[in-house]
Length: 268
Ligand code: GLU
Image (cartoon, rainbow, N blue to C red):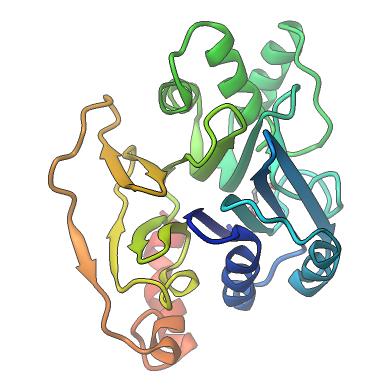
């Protein structure tokens, strides 16, 4: 399971995503990518190898869009390659998804979606997710949040997901099951990440999401929902008062101790 970062706010997302992904590099990864909303569509760029290579490519584009998601991938399904790097998109390219974890029933879902006319461009388990969301919208889901909710009802496995849609500019929908995800609100917008260190410069008040919960991030703020779709009125905010050096080690004095304490969760 590797890294996720997302931002929606009042500043261009590109630099924030690259900075966040760089903070997550310590986990190891094989490729990196972003999807940024700009001028009515999603600009998706991924590269095999380092975040610096992605940053170099993005430097040619300098996207101004203020909403986007980014990912560093540690391949579990499909070899490390540009085609398998996240974000993955729907057939029409209007939905993009980054995912940490493993979708165990992806083969059945892929077969079902292909039979319904969806075409796939990667070998990943992840790619079923944007197609399931697209299908949910075709089947009448009223918005991205509901479509992500109904897609997740079909998933077996572990996931942290961040999703954007060109049809809901400025919105990121995030959810998780058995894979960590935190959400925070800074002065310039809302952040989602798989690790607090990706957003610690912007905010120290974060919501550590529980399994099955969803978050809808917009430049105006974040709304949290239960798996059943009810608004969570009073989400539990955790204040982080570590400095960056300590935060990178999750509050532990060194990486070895952090990884020892992570073992129960990883094994589960
Ligand atoms: N299973 C997904 C893949 O192979 C996500 C891997 C990850 O967590 O980075 O693309």
